[in-house]
Length: 90
Image (tube, rainbow, N blue to C red; front, top):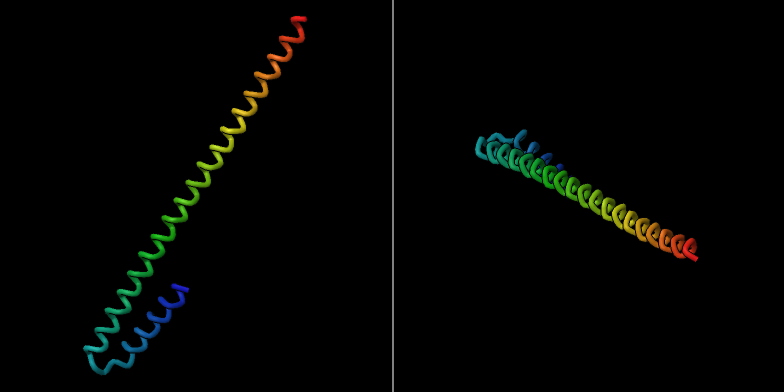
């Protein structure tokens, strides 16, 4: 939705610049278009950073899940050893 608004603002700015017989209006349109581009670039940087953060969080969650599974497997192995030791002792 934001992209559509940014594109619409950019197109409107270019339209004003094209029909700007008044150099002041043309300059304002060019400035508005430049500001729109800067805002769009900043937005994409923020979106990419957020995506990177989400990927890092997903990787950390996966690592925690793997560690939890490893602990469960170790507990099961200790339990099996204890059962085997008590069975062999009899």
